[in-house]
Amino acid sequence: MATADKPYLEFSDFLSKYFDGKMQKLSVHAGFTCPNRDGTVGWGGCTYCNNQTFNPAYCADARSVAQQLEEGKQFFSKKYPHMKYLAYFQAYTNTYAEMSRLQRLYEEALSVDGVEGLVIGTRPDCVGDELLDYFAKLHKDKFVLLEYGVESTLDKTLRRINRGHDFACVEDAVKRTAERGIPVGVHVILGLPGESREEILGHALTLSNLPIDTLKLHQLQIVRGTAMAKEYADRPEDFKLYTPEEYAALVTDFVERLRPDIAVERFTSQSPKELLIAPDWGLKNYQFVELVKRNFRERQTRQGVFLEG
Image 1: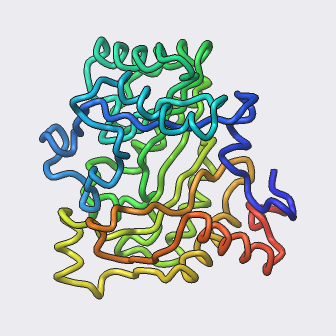
Image 2: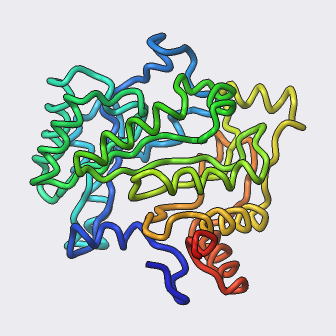
């Protein structure tokens, strides 16, 4: 739980329930696509999305999952020789394939020495009961965290950004996952066009009523090669792009309204400079985190304080 010295629950606190030592996520690109790109639910993908922003250098389609993980281990093991790892299936929709292929890829990752579990990024409309039953069985022996892209709890926004599903779909997927004892993470973008401050803060209250364990936030970024980049060029007045100080205040407001047992994994994301149109803050992650912690100190507040009483 949050304290005066630690105003919000961190992802490391969540992982400490499952692991004794330090854990590091290693991203892998398993060659998946997305039903919002291949015509199953839509074309062109979500308006903000350019998957080139997700993958570190050791991820490449030509390398197997095991090869990518071994290269990732080499990167971190020099500094942390006793580190253990989680294979992070990150790019595109990592449950969007036939069961036999999914099982082969997940189990290939778990066969790599030092890999103690899986973190699987996916869409809420791509998790059938058969797959969830498989994850539930797997989670009895190896850690599994399912991370759903939610982005917004408002259907009007989900339509605008071409998500291809509504929020009821999110609620259903999260509940079916949690009912099986599988940890659930969600990802939300703060500052999507058309959302007021009150609506953004409402996401925290809505998500707090769902059985989720972890949360990732990040600021809206306008990235080259996306439909949103064209939208921004045509109608920049539709977008509110925050300064670091403004966004840190918004994040603090958000976390004050978030259930205190939900671990906050991150507040921001940083697209590669060559792809980023705006906003370009020029801050390291730890520098932004300090802005948020300073806000909590100055307010003398903590995660979930608005839910008390």
